[in-house]
Each structure stands twice: as structure tokens, then as C-alpha cells.
Image 1 (cartoon, helix red, strand yellow):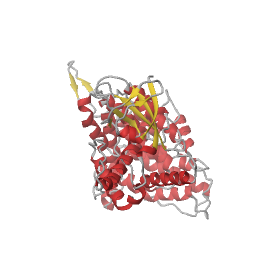
Image 2 (cartoon, rainbow, N blue to C red):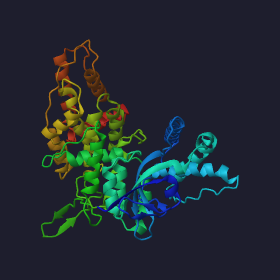
Image 3 (spheres, helix red, strand yellow):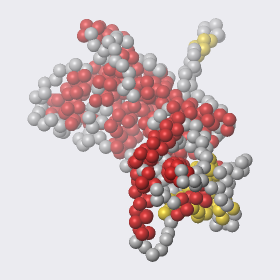
Length: 499
């Protein structure tokens, strides 16, 4: 890895002065922002913090006999061989904010005949442009007094400059440079946009930004790819964000290969008695656990699954009075699953299971699949004496590879058969008749949704037995034609979209 390190002032880097590096080389060039960088997002909170820190620095030097500069931290740059520009890999939030401060400060100086601030940085992202306009307005209205004392010649920073874009990216991943740390999705964005031809990078950067917050879907994808029987890996705890970030970067960035945009969908073919064949339409979309290639392949993969998440799991579907199975699914998901207390870790597994099912079978019997998956995945909520912890879900998946059952199924009926073989026992702990425990509230909320009446004064053991029996009795027969006909008739008589 070829890396040059130098110390300089903000004035020197803004004015493209030649800066001597530790290895004797000269660093110079115009600052630019690569198209694959995330948008400029610093707001009033970060600006106030920066201004406050700078004021503390001024107070310190006022009480000191020595004059030292304000240290901004380190910035990672890539020196382009094509045009000599210094691409900002890490530090654009700080540098952009300071450029805005210098610009607003120069407006007052220009009126006095001094040279205006002339740093040129281009931002194609509408989000960046809007944030810049907002911050400029805020600085002009609220920050003029504080920024009057800013002196770019007294602000120091460390430059880390690489000759290779790959080296800059790898260095960036491993360093904490003092700015706002990027999350996993931001880092894999840089990785995949860099793998695309330059004339298409801006197009795919816009597509990526249009996806919004990718953290929820990326979390589900990592779970789906990690929790499998043959290659089981521990999903890092949310309490260890650096490990979560590393898992995302490794699985959806570094481990991706090189090649075309490939979707490993399934293809159904029926053979005729005369030797002919009928090819049905191939599955549309991507397999959640499929191998991925850097660039367009992974971007389309993320786009596909984020589309599924927004459509089916975001809670934005408008419920309507309908006997359509999809309405039954949305009613069940929004009215029960999304309203259960103390189930966030369980729901993480449940949502991942739904994504795998939908990506393989679409809406085919989705309302039934949702209930059968609920019976299996939410069983730890009643079989555990203690609350369901994050590590409990990992242990549950190791013992009951429910995601594998879906992924290994060729039809929804085959998937239901796997799920129906699962059995559980409700534990009577915390179900005393006079105790309004979280587990007890959960049980009665589930039974109420399915319109199953159970005496609230039952003994703990009797209530536990009743819950298991009624849930099995309602869900296990689903998918059987007779039961479905009976269920649909009941729904029509009730005039309710409940599934």
C-alpha cells in the first residue's frame, strides 16, 4: 500500500498549495468529491459542535503563552493519476462544512475589498444541494459572530494520501479519522459504485440514494445469509456496531466477486408424455443467499429486496375491506405482528423469513405462510421462561433452521410441510391468573386476533395448554382445501379482512 502522510493547514489544502509529505513527495491538487460518496448530511447539530470546539480552542490559546493550531483530525485522499485531483475518501462532511464557513466569512471580507473565498466543490446529489443551502442560510442567520474568528491558516489537519483508489478504500475501512463514522451501507456503496464504469457511476449513485435508509434491509439480508445450517455464522449484536458494520462490509462488499449481473432464480419445467416439455416463467428477482458480484449485481440485489421490504413489511399498505389473500396477510402483519410488545428480536427473524418466502414464491399463499411462520418463529415467546434475548434467537435458528426450510422448498406446500413438523410447548411460568405478565399479554393478544376465546382465569398450566392447542388447531390445517373454504366463509360472514 503506497501511502503518503503530511501535516498542513486548511488554508494550504483549500488553496492547492504544494505540501511536503513525510516521504519527501509533494502533495498538491484540487479537492474533488467522487460520485460514489454519500451525500453531504451535516446539519445544525454538527455545525454547532464544530463552532463550540473551535471557541474552546480560542479560549485555550488566549490563556496560553504558546500559539498552536486547532486540530481538525485526519482526512483520507486519493490522488488521481488521470487529472491530479485529490478525491476526498473520508472527511468530506468536515471539509464541506468548513468550506461553507469560509465562504460566509469571506462575504463580509469581500465588502472590505479582500479576495473572496474561491474553493470549488461540485455536488450532484439533490440531498447535498439542499443541505448546503440550508446550512448557508443558518450560518448567515446564526453563526456570523462565531465564524468571524475562524482562521483557516490556524486550522491543522493530517492528510493521508494514496496513489491507488483501492488502497484509499482499504485504509478508510480500518481507520477512525475523527469524523462521523460511516455505517456499513455507506461503505459498501463506495465499494460497488467504484466497480461500475465511470460513465455510469453517477446514474447508479442516484439510484442508490433513492433507496433511502438501507440499514433495515441490510440487517435482514445479513441474517438470512448468516443463519443457515451448513455455514452458520453468528450475527453480531446491535450492541457492537463496529462488528455489525464489519459483517455488512464483508458479506455485501468484500466477499462479492467480479462478473455480470446474475439473478439465480428458479425455473419450473414440466415434461409431457410424448417427450415434449412446458417451460413456465422463471422466478423474477434474486435469491437472498445467492452469490453476488461487485457493482451493478449487488446494487440491483439490494434494490430488489428493499422493494420487497417497502411493499410488504413497511406498514405503509392501506388496509381495505377485501377477501383477497393479500389483504389477509397485510391485516395479520400490521394488526398483530407489528403491535406485539417485547418481540423485536423475534420480529427480525420473522421479517427475514418472509423476505426469503416472498422472493421465492411471491404472494402465493402468503397469508397462510405468514401464520405458519408465526407459529414457528414466535414460539420462543411462550416456550422461554425468560424474555427472548438477542442471543436466544441465534440459538433458536441453530436448533430449528427455519430459514433453510424455506430456502430448500420448491413449492409453498413443501415449505408448509417443513413448518408443520415443528412442535412447541408453552411454558406455564409467568402465567399466574392474577399476574399481568408480558408473556400473558402476548398470549391473549394472539388469541384475540384469531378470535379464539379462552377463560382468563385458567390456571397457568391450563392456559399454556390451551394456547398451544388452539394455535396448532387454527394454523396447522391452513393450506388444506377444506379448512381454507371454511375459513373464507367465516371471514365473509364476519365482514372482516382478518386472516
